[in-house]
Length: 115
Length: 341
Image: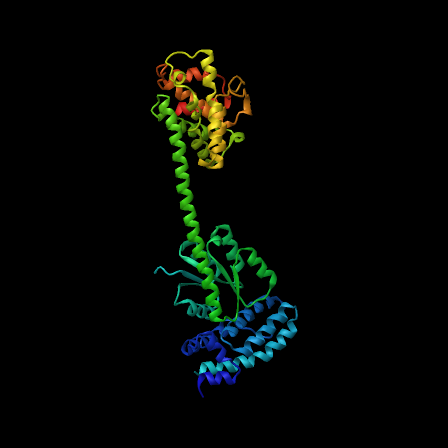
């Protein structure tokens, strides 16, 4: 299957992403292939402590922004919820949301890395 | 680097910088910064930055810190800053707007909107800078014209007074020196350098009223009679009348200083001067300073009714009270200047 079609299957809104990049498919592919590296640079785990909340907010906020720009919609929505929970002082709900989101992220990252 | 504008992209996430770079690469030179400290350094050292796309939330030096620095160094007045954020924290956004940010770009970006919004603002700032430069140049030319007009007026009366025109120049030099000395020595008389410049520019007008004095008195070789001296004294008041009739040729401050100096440069500290008999600090410090400069130059220059005195003799006459009483503080400042000469 084509790379972008595979991403679309995983919920990535590639049409929207391409539209925002003036239809430049190769550019989008170049950018999206940098996403796994970013996930490595901004590691987040559901077992964070209270002391780490600010750090987690920073990382999830950054991941949310990039996911939005690349139209990786499931991750954008998921990280938006997590940031919101953390800012509202609901770390337990954030942890639950993160637990659900990480496998989705893993699938997307694996797909990107395969290509 | 060509003559296109330069856009500085500040974001700690490389992918975001690449996306923005791609959007603006065609129309602008792009500089990237991965953090606030690097951004501040680029803004301070690069005169060609046309706009800053600034991520708000960054580790260490964040977007708000960058804006604060740009406020401190004045860069915010000339460089439009666009906030890039996925956050909708209204307090932070309001703080950023309060610090001079011009617009907010919410992530995810929509390229076409972004290009239009940022392009429009960059053009507006460019246009504003051009207008400011034109206004500055015209103001400079207007000021030069005003100063020339004032100098022509002052020099014309010097020639009529059988002087070479050099008296006016010497008065300006001595006024500047003495005013600066007084200002530095006495906090109560302190004036910033730009005000002293205006006083010096105004000092040329001190004798402009002599234009209304008949030649027979103005250029009389011998001592003036009491009646003639009364007419001569009117040059202070006549000068003010003249300035009042042409206030538009000079700016308001030069006019105000000029008017005051013209009227009061023959007042004396003990109240025995003219035309108003002011005493002590009723006389403005600039009129007092011009009075000393005027007397010293009159004594050391040849006139139709006398030869030039030596500098030593002139000093003795001034300190000895032969030319009226002056402010003791100005006398100390004057003594300092004379010692340096």
